[in-house]
Structure formats: C-alpha cells, structure tokens
Image (tube, rainbow, N blue to C red; front, side, top):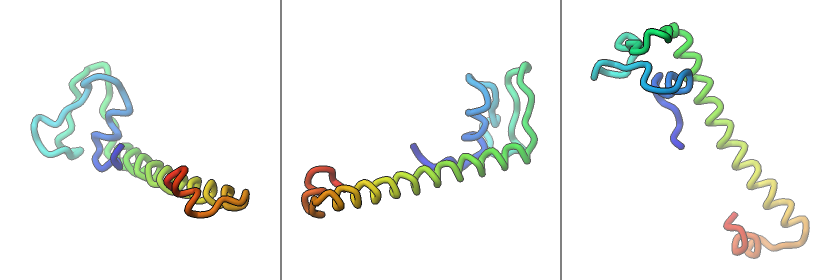
Length: 92
C-alpha cells in the first residue's frame, strides 16, 4: 500500500461507493463534488486533518515495522544465532 497523498485517499475511507468526484478536474477541495445526496461534504479542514492523520499513521507503521525487525534480529542474536544465520533463515 502506498503512502496516502491526496484528499481522495481520506474521502474513500469516509463512505463506501462512489459518493464523491472531481468532475474530471484536479483532485482539490475546490473541485470536490458530492454525488450522493445522502452524504455531506466534509470541510476543507477535515480533509486536510484526515489526510495528515492517514500519512502519520502510514509513516508510523513503517517505523514500527522496521523497529520490530530490528528487535527480532536482536532477540535471535541474543539466543545465539549469528547475523549470517538470521539473514539466511529470515532475510532480516
């Protein structure tokens, strides 16, 4: 999964289906149109904050994954495995 980069990444998580669009224009808040009259248009700030949170969550997940790899590698070394054995067995 790629790092979220536009408000459409946030909007897709609010509701299912094709409830919004951009009328074949640039994906900016100014061009955002709501296609489903049962849905309300989020504020621009909600879109900005929502996208920022998605990006922060994505970045933290990458950091956590790398930290978990390093922790696992260290634990295996503490058990007596060599770096080469760990790399051969697990690719880390």
